[in-house]
Length: 181
Image 1 (spheres, rainbow, N blue to C red):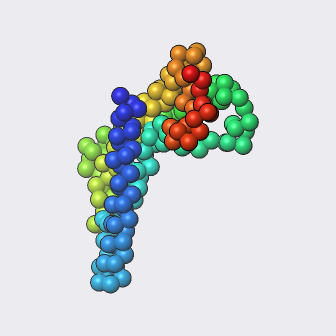
Image 2 (image 1 turned 135 degrees about the horizontal axis):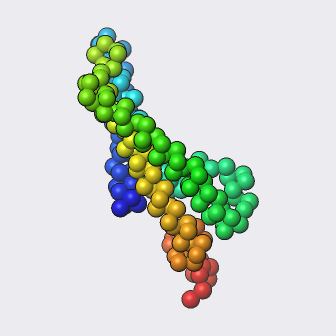
Image 3 (image 1 turned 30 degrees about the horizontal axis):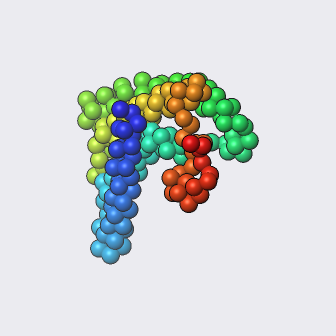
């Protein structure tokens, strides 16, 4: 569920970048061409970018596009890399992600219950932006569990390591390279 869910959410939510660009451009045109200004449009742009960042964190982990210190990591054997991934997931990713879910949920609930609105004139309600934090870190935690299971299975030899396989297009171009049959 977490991998498929994060894949769907990542591919869907990335369209919010386009929405943010259109909102930003529309707001700029309205401000400079028509002398109209709206804090709500500016805040919507921020909320859309926050949604992309938070909701796509799990997708980023799924695609192995997260920040890593490659200068060191790339020098290790694949087995050591897998052990580093497991250690980092268990002792850093999971505790921090779950702590952020735990701490952010009451903040969202209070904002929703109170009807909290931005302090800016014409600002937007804050509850839905605050909801992005626990949802985003829940998705990241679920993907973290999925990645942890995969890394352990690879170390045990239960599943093949996708990182050691050539992409199909490369394998088709180089039929002599690739796994022995």
